[in-house]
Image 1: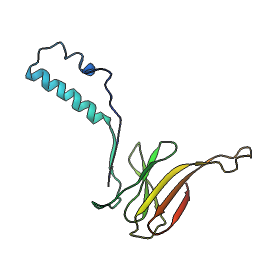
Image 2: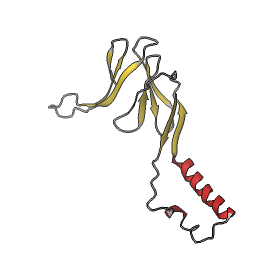
Image 3: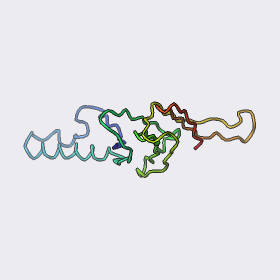
Length: 142
């Protein structure tokens, strides 16, 4: 499974990022420069382009959830393993094995819980919940 994390590019106005090229007559050279500017912006929008090492088939329905702090994502795979990918570097940061090998995951959720809501100094902890076709629901304390 390949993971792409992108910045969304929304131009403020039509051709506003090509403002210096708008005054030139439409020549092949100006069109080529305009296309290069667009290609450079599109390439810069790709933040992460990695393989998650998660086996998938054409019939797979992968699940992906963001970590609560936005520092990474968790992805499911057809082998029952949940993999955590760091968004800045694209490195594999966690491999969570708990489901039966070869079972697909049907749900994945990530969030934060308060350890003891009423007690002072209790810090919330990160939690990941995964459910699979192996009839298991696993709560991971990250």
